[in-house]
Image 1 (cartoon, rainbow, N blue to C red):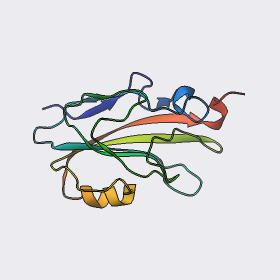
Image 2: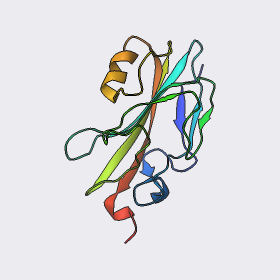
Image 3: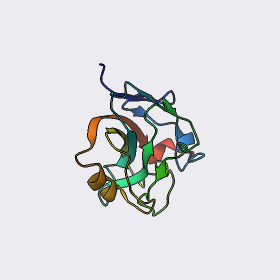
Image 4: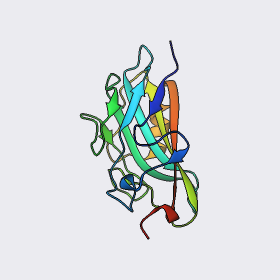
Length: 153
């Protein structure tokens, strides 16, 4: 079986995320295509984070209990029947790239899990990490780049 893959028609891995998906644009999530989910997967989890934030890791989006056969996450929408956790702003929604300075990496991490998680929507990335422990069958990632100078002048 091929390795699980995460890609986007909006940007290539390690390339610039279009402003549309950032705080300089519409601040909506890009389409994400999911391929080669391993057999035995009961749910998927997705974390979008910025490891280059001034105060350490900044979480932009946390989603779990995504159906394993979903195929893709549609632009500007949340997967049906999934749970959206709290991001670093304290909101249960996607928060696009919005770097205060410099160029930042935004990593979309996708996890295939052998369980559906019993985790409330009030949970954070840290709580999701604990709940996923011992349940990860596979993981993959997609990285986008965005700079404060990429926005409108």
